[in-house]
Image 1 (tube, rainbow, N blue to C red):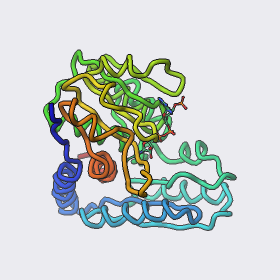
Image 2 (tube, helix red, strand yellow):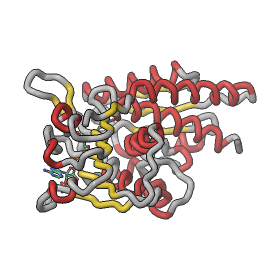
Image 3 (tube, protein in one colour):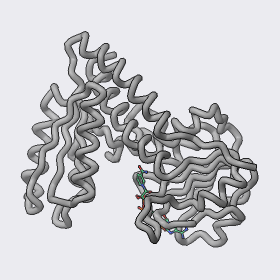
Length: 284
Ligand code: NAP
């Protein structure tokens, strides 16, 4: 079997177009959706990510402001700025770029964001909403994966989904979203014995580890849907995922590429969350 590709670039483009349309509708009512991005320190990767977030927002009609702070910013000052943004009705989404310098307590910082503006979906209130099936913001990466499954018309009901990885921002919320769609979910992690025994039974595998070739062809059931969240570099410095793309493509039914898969979807879902924050604030 040769797997069909789930094209994250094309899907993200369609989502951005939809966001642009809905943003126009809000603007017509005098509401400008606004995202405040806070960056502390000079981590080069974070600088690139935040620049992309601003550019993506601007391109879809959302307004994004990037506030940069020196690496030695005090926690009190950062929390004070977040509280100001919480109180500012013209700001609909607040995003603090992670990782933060060590002296800042990331949990405390995230918990200070008003859950109604938590467009990253990292607040415990957002996590709690996901666990209990209440409305809230879903973390962008697993949310993007769900959109990819939706785009191929995949019915998760009764299917066996295996998530490799249990981080708070990808693996755990991913498993909960799959469960919410009535999949039977297995979560694997570094202490899992015989990972392949689990993945071989899976109709859907989501790999979110951060190690190359965690999933190889012999570990995949023929026809399975394989979603590759991983972002790694190969020996040539080229971006690659957790999945042995070439080998697994010969066995799986559907597969997401890296690059051009989950990455662009993550970026697109931040725009969706920001727009939805503005729509909710407007009572739409
Ligand atoms: P993380 O916090 O480091 O979590 C990695 C998870 O993988 C952990 O739960 C770990 O288990 C598990 N793991 C490690 N080795 C394993 C093994 N050999 N077998 C099974 N599980 C293993 O990473 P993350 O933030 O979730 O991100 C995961 C990957 O996705 C990274 O490559 C990251 O760069 C990428 N990512 C991509 C996007 C995107 O937009 N494309 C967004 C976010 C993240 P333990 O819990 O037991 O340690």
